[in-house]
Length: 487
Ligand SMILES: Cc1cc2nc3c(=O)[nH]c(=O)nc-3n(C[C@H](O)[C@H](O)[C@H](O)COP(=O)(O)OP(=O)(O)OC[C@H]3O[C@@H](n4cnc5c(N)ncnc54)[C@H](O)[C@@H]3O)c2cc1C
Image 1 (cartoon, helix red, strand yellow):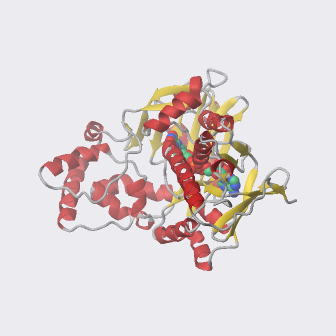
Image 2 (cartoon, protein in one colour):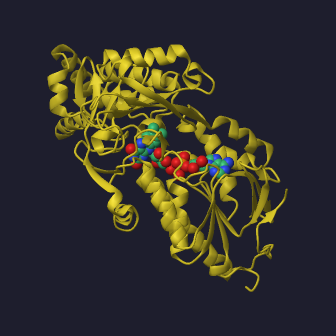
C-alpha cells in the first residue's frame, strides 16, 4: 500500500496536554513516531497542574500520584520525576458529625464515632437492604437507588443524601447510578459488614463502588506541587522527539472519506490559525467540544447529543496563610461547609515561603457564572467564616488569596446522559484514525495513573491502526508535509 504513510512518516496529532495526552505523546514518541500535541494553555498538565504566585505553588486541587498502575508508576518514578518526587503517606480525613475520621472510612472508626442507636439502625438497614435485593434483584437507575443498595437506606440518609445534593446542585435521584459505581470511593467499613453478611449467605453482589484510594497508601508528590509530574512528562516526551505546541486552541477538525484529515488551531496569543494535516488523531479535549468542532459536521441528532454531556466547573481558592501548619493531614473532606475539601500540601513536602506560612487549597464546585464561580464578597466571607469555625485559620492570617478555576472540572453523569454519550462515542469510533480518551475525551473519572494508562492504550491503538492501514487498501491520504498558517 504505497499511499499509506509508513509508521515513521505517519503524522499523529494529540489534542490536549493533560496527563492523558502527554502520556500518549510520550508513548508514541518512544516508538519513533511523528507526534504533535496541541494544548490551548501556555503550560502542560490540564487539571493536574499548579500555578506560581509570588514564589509559591498552588495546585489546581491537590494532586498526588497513586501507585495502583505499577508500570505507569515505575515509568514516572524512574524516567520522569527523578529527584523531584516525594513519597508521602496518605493521611486524609473526613469531618463528619462533629468528629474527624480517616478517609476512606474505617470500620473501627465508624463504630466508635456513630451514636449507638444510629449505628444499630444503619446496620439493620444494611442487613435488610442486602436481604431485599438478594430476593428481588434490581439494577439501580439513579444514584439514590445505587447508594441504598450499597449502603442501606439509613446510612444513605445519614451520610450521602444531603452532601450529594450540595456537591452536584441536584438531587441524588437525578444523578446516574454509574457515578456511584465508577467514581465514588467505597466505604471499607461497609465492606466489612457486607463480608459478615456474605458469610451467612446474605449479599447482593450486583452493585459495586470503586477503590479510588486505600486507607493506607503511599502517594507521590513534589516540593513544587502538582506541576512537577506533568511538566517533566512533557519535557520527557519532547526529549523523545514529540512536538508540543502551547497556546493552540483546537478550532476545527476536518474529516473526509471517513477519516480525520487535519486539525486547525488558533493561537490564543496572536489569533493566528494554523492547519495541521494528520493521518491519526488522539483526542483528550472534552468530547462534546470535539464533536461540535468537526467539519463537515456530524448528523444533527449526534450534534444534539452534545448538549447532554455537561461538566461541573471548579473554583479553587489558593490561600497563603501566616500559620506554619493549619490542618492535621494532607487533606480533609467537609460535608457541611461551603468548601468540600481543604488540602495543605506543605504537609506533603511543598516548599512554602516564608517558612512560617502555609498554603491552603480550598476546593468548591460551582456553576458557570454563579456566585461561587464569580467569587462574590459573600462567598469569600462564607469561606473565611467556615475556615474559622473549623479552626483551620483566622481571616487575619490569610495573606494572599489566589483563584484557580477550570470550566471542565467534573463530568456530570446526569440521569439519562448515557445514550447521548454512546451517540458521540459511536460517531467518533466511526473514524478509524481517531481515538478519544481521558477525563474529558472519554467523559469519565480516571485518576492521573488511569488517565495516563488511557493515553498509553490510545497510543497502542493508533500503532495497531497504522499496521492495519498499511495492510488494507485505503483512499489516498492528503499528503501535506508542513502545517499551514492560514491567517
Ligand atoms: C480537584 C481535583 C483533584 C484531583 N486530585 C487527583 C489526585 O490527587 N490524584 C489523581 O491521580 N488524580 C486526581 N484528579 C484527577 C486528575 O486531574 C485527572 O485524572 C487528570 O487530570 C485527567 O487528565 P486528562 O488529560 O484526561 O484531562 P485534563 O487534565 O482535563 O486535560 C485536558 C487538556 O485538554 C486541554 N484542552 C481543552 N480544550 C482544548 C482545546 N480546545 N484545544 C486544545 N487543548 C484543549 C486542556 O487545557 C487540558 O490541558 C483530580 C481532579 C480534580 C478535579
